[in-house]
Image (tube, rainbow, N blue to C red; front, side, top):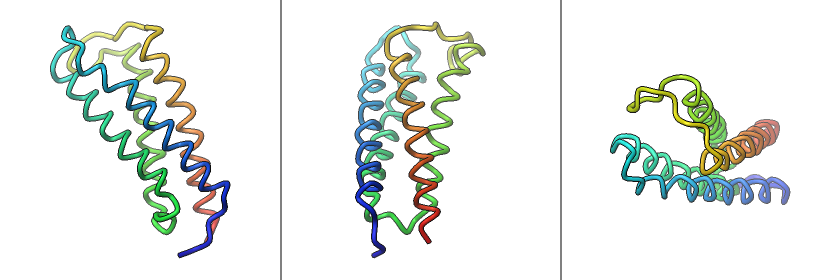
Length: 131
């Protein structure tokens, strides 16, 4: 197993914890009854994916050799960010109209998405540079 710096491990653990916070922000949206079931199911599925992403971040010391996982993490967090921002301007899937701009879970998710994009990109660059 290759040597991994403590800063890389710490970065993975912090990113994992923030991924769990992102999931905790989205999972309660499944219980919002006035949302269509498809949208609620999407929030639950996306929260489960965020938990898996958090576990993969935390297991970075074991998955160091699998660089593709870090690239998939970057893509996943960009997709979440784009879905969040574009559904405020364009019609959201399953709803047919733009979602309202709120200060609740959407704002928290927006901030966490940006942090996770930065952390996952940094991890990918660091892992890719270590040959």
